[in-house]
Length: 99
Length: 99
Image (cartoon, rainbow over all chains, first blue to last red; front, side, top):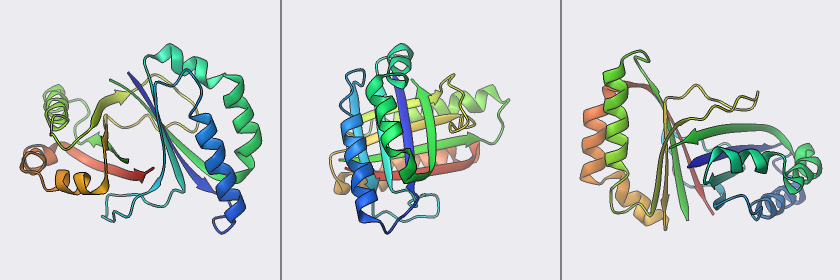
C-alpha cells in the first residue's frame, strides 16, 4: 500500500471563498479513479504539544501500489486541480509512506 | 471520520534493533480494536521538494468518530506502547483531521 498525505496551508485564511474553492477542489481530486481510498479533512479539535493543527486542509489518499500513485501524479484531473488551485495555498507538505 | 497521522523519527537511525522494535510496536498498536483502518509505513522512494521523507515510520489510523479516537488515546495497549517505545524516538509529529 502507498499512503500519500498532503497538508495545505491557505494563503488567505480569512478568505471564505478561497477556502471553499480549495475544499471543493480537493473533494473533486479525491474522485480520481487511481485512488483506492480517499480522506479529505480539516484540523480536528485535538490540542497537544506534538500536534500540528495549523494546516487548513489535509488529504490522505491510499493507493494499491507505487505505480498507481505515479499515474495519479500525472493524471489530467490532478494537473487541472493544481492549475486551478495552486494560487490558493501558501504551503503544501507531503509525506509518502509505503507499508 | 477521524484520521490520526503520526510520523516518528528514531533517536538512533543506525540502530537496527531499535528500528525493528519500534516497527513491531507500531504493528501491534495498529491492532487496537478502536481503530477502523490502520496503515503502518516507512518513507516511499518519492523525492520532490515538497516531500518530507526524513521520518522513519508513519502511522495513519482511521477512526469512525472523535470518541473512538479519544478512547484509543487512553487505551491500555496504547499507553503500554508509549511506555515501551518512547525511548526509541527523538521526535513525533501528529496531525489530526476530521472529514
